[in-house]
Image 1: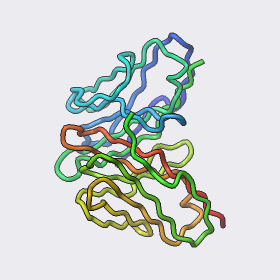
Image 2: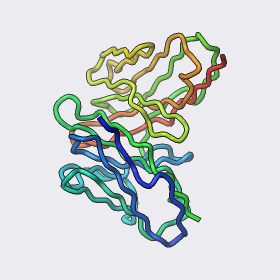
Image 3: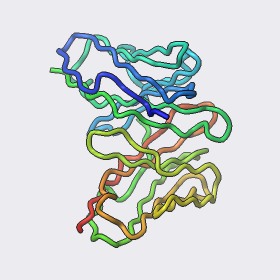
Image 4: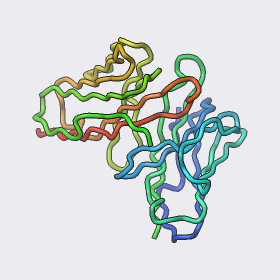
Length: 115
Length: 113
């Protein structure tokens, strides 16, 4: 079974631009969560989508948004990029049924650099 | 944001030695997960724990869910060079927080052959 895939793997953007990152979960997984990883703050939860609905949200500004499609694929968007948005953005999927609900499997991440 | 207290921050050990790391929190968690991350990759799930007191092994790795539900530890026995990486603990607070993991700061492990 294929793992979580994320595209693109690397991205360089300029301050003020916007960016869209894509995530394809493991087949059969309905929940997709997004995280930001930086050396200073570590891994921080952005939001979680389940059945095309945002179910949980972390403490990030409204410039960070996401959505999920009917095939469970998810995208996240960051508008008006700031230098501090430079980070590794990780997507994780989970089966979300029964006892295995909380086992999240991560993709390789998208490395975003804002200049 | 909220984080778990993970220690030690880093370890430099000799091949063959055992390793122990732990995570503590002031909050009660329903689930504890342990991940390993290597450079340029996303975290890889090592062990998942669901019940207080639960002890689970995965090869040379053993992890336990603390009785108080506020802590967890991970042991690696007989370390080998490929154990090098950053190990993270992660917890989920409860059913209302489905899909949201809170992570420790990570333990960087280096193994000298």
